[in-house]
Image 1 (cartoon, rainbow, N blue to C red):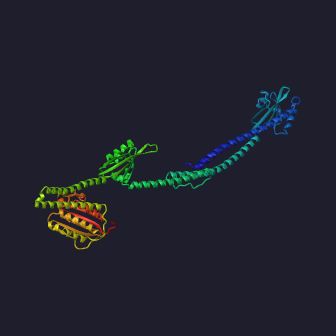
Image 2: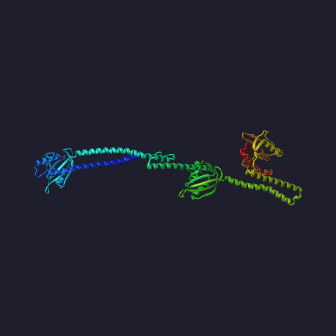
Image 3: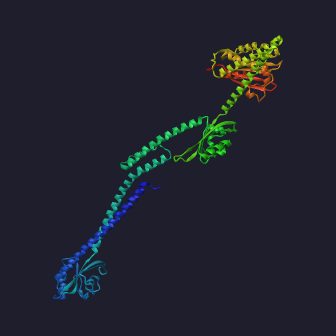
Length: 590
């Protein structure tokens, strides 16, 4: 693209050239006309002087010739006297008799034939080789035109003067053009450089380079324009930084939101999706942009709600399900977003994962049902046997003793169940303040073995314990003992007579593993994920007969978590079960 200062200079020079040329031609033509008018007036005056000085009626041709020659001595003009028929009577520079008839000369014809007061003609003289100016006036006697007096002047010097004037004028015009060019270039650069810099700054601003500034500070309106551009650039930079900060804040919020956010335009194409939405759809959020929602959506319900919201332009809230990549229950809230003119631009969909809430609600419902069922059994037994005794069975001492034993057993079971429920509730709500101390895990295991030794002996089980090496962890002794007691008690219950139970301890740098293994009935794969749920029993009949409440493993899990530990279970049905409890040696905070 041509430089701006070149375009300004070219336009300025073109305009000045036209103005100077027009002015030069006008001045030259005006000077020429003025000079020619001056010479014409001079010749006219000489012609009038000649007419007054001669007398064609009384003077002979010889005398007339002498008078004409005498008059021409004092002037630079040629004088010719011509009669009415065109014959030359006298001439200041030639022999009249040798001269041809002048009747056909334009300046003579203008007077004799046209009757004008004067005549003038400018023509090229073949004899002399240059242009001549001729002026004629009539010679009148009475009312008759007797002849013509003609004065003439060579235009050679006039033309030379005009040529000199033209050359001088050309030089002046050339000099003026040269000066105009120099001034024009300087002026054009003075105007164009700031403008070009402003254009460059504007283009950099367009390309989002908000550090661009106009460094030149011209005066006048250009200076004000440069300052305005700098102010605009600073304002744009500030606004863009604010927009970027707001965008980063928004993206930070969207990125770490647990709820999925989806922005869809009015054509159904995805404009934005956060990380949570990508996780819900099993895709990377960046890959969703520009695609139709029906292409990437894994739920027909979601696509239906999006289309419905785009069609109706109203807020919609509903509960939908995803089956891929995982089965989830989602609370979907869709709302349209509109432009300045209230036209629909698209919709925003926010999806809350309520799978855990629904699962907890289901667990709560099952818990209530299980508690009711577990309480109902001993209460029904107590109530039934009490009513039987009241109806007369108490008179039979043997029967009375059996029924009271049953009532006592069921009341103990009921008491244990209520205590376990309250204990589990306190653990979950962190109402029990733990007392952190150094606990010898080996010693705790041996204490547990003493506690259950009677049951082990009764079933003829082999109980293998770790050696006497001391292994220490930080925690609450009673809670750790309860963890081991519950696991070992379960092993005793679910291991058949003559079986084997092994309890071992292994120590690592920062953790201790407690391993309880039996060769009992084992746990099926379908039951493994649920064994830590409240009231869940692998063998419900045997567990209830053993006096279990179904809360033991749930309590164990919460006690381990309160010690910042973990529990892992491995089992094969019919081959036995291995529980591995991992506890940290040091408790950071309990």
